[in-house]
Image (cartoon, rainbow, N blue to C red; front, side, top):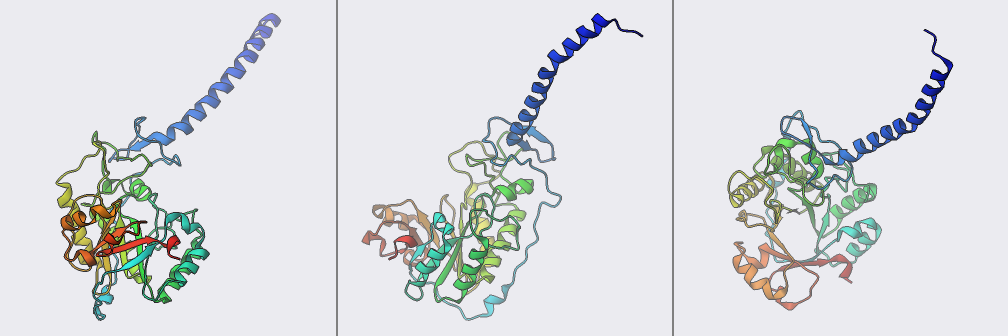
Length: 337
């Protein structure tokens, strides 16, 4: 079929006019797709949905339902055969997260401390990134020099200090992303709750969660730490957007007792930062308290439920008020000298 010349010219003009529109539409579609990935949430049956009410993910990674929701528990209980060491009142120091960017300075500060001083260091982020070469997960932080951290942890094991590791227990973006059944669901159902930092929270009643925490705790124990402190051992605070089946205090109390039974030994302590009310486990364990001034210390101690507030209650503070002196207390390492 022959198309008249004038018709061809008209079609060419129309094509030239529509081409930029089609290109712009394609670019807009791609940009929208990339932008929308930040809001992808997932249901328990593996389907993806968009929810624009929740905070966007920082990396735009789509969530996937795991093939196996539970993690096998692996631990070595041989340490229980060693002679018991009693817990004692302590005055020590904690390494602030920002100081991990200069581990050479941290090492020098620790080296200058008196023999036997307790030192606490963070080993994992709320995003699920490990600050050292963990065998539990291959997710590594790009904010910390992993090689230097490994060297620091090996060096700590040889020093005469009381080494404490701290990490967020029930707040972990990466684990929640890959283990949907172990997370805390949104009250509307269908997907996990995310907090303002884009992090998922883990359910303390889940055996998968407890197995995951057990592996980390035992690994840190085998690396030479004398104590592990579980931060964020609570449900998401100040929100009504979560669904919790059961009494929150009872769920946390049961989880703490289970972790103590599996992980603690007569030379190794498992402790908790107290953000939410639960009954502390018996045995080699402490409660760490943050955000309290010295005037509140006595009341906090009276309501703590610990066996011996002088030993089992630890205040994390920058203050040097003498009213803290009757309890265990830890202050920033940067202010130790």
